[in-house]
Length: 309
Image 1 (cartoon, helix red, strand yellow):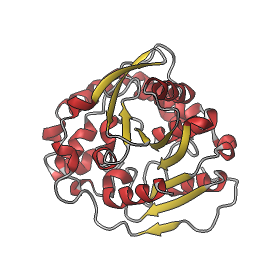
Image 2 (spheres, one colour; image 1 turned 180 degrees about the vertical axis):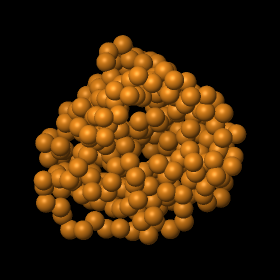
Image 3 (cartoon, helix red, strand yellow; image 1 turned 45 degrees about the horizontal axis):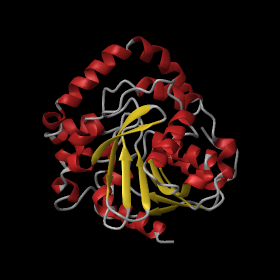
Image 4 (cartoon, helix red, strand yellow; image 1 turned 60 degrees about the horizontal axis):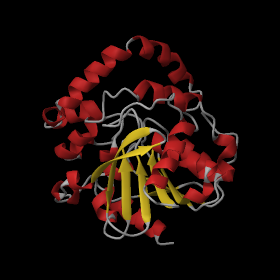
């Protein structure tokens, strides 16, 4: 959906270099069990990963995601930050919340989680729905977010998207079957992602070149499928308006997008950039919806430079 706001100068499209991780990724050698803990936030147990020491840096996954969406970032930034990632309620290992799923509710839960972790303020990075939640937190509790990073964030064209509106009644009818199928696939993610062609079939909507992503990394992403929060969260992001409140975001904001994002087009990136006062926009060429996984070296370098401002 096009914005009524005039766009700023044409977004900077950059060549992000090599596609996918190069060499042995640091996350493979981490014993993640040592960094997992259950934190009760806003009355809900939240599966939480924390590691490192230094300024807090929080990562929020998107729809159908899990904390593993940030595997290429967590051990890298833990060298000089306290990094936090979680499974939002209804995703990963976190149970559904007692209240209805909503974007405002997820932002409130994130606020509560940071309280429980003793973090008065943090830099917050969100992808897709996670970006929507992070932006909502920056608006609702501005003192909590010292800086904001939106990676292919939902909230503009996803609001009242007629395609989603038409699909929702069908998805409600087949929700149980769809969830069972996705859960079956998630349980077999290692085998399913071993073949490049099958990897492409399974991930072509989110990644530009799935066959060029390492099979172990792809498998970790598919484990987030088939969770009970999907439909409720899809309805929540479809029905929640944020555009008019984006100018209230007062912290420095980095907006990162893939030029070839099939889920949320780069046109939305220009709208976020136009409406958020202190923002900068970078678009990666030949990249899809998950720039942090597709271009981890370039993404991590860009994020490090932004955090050092």
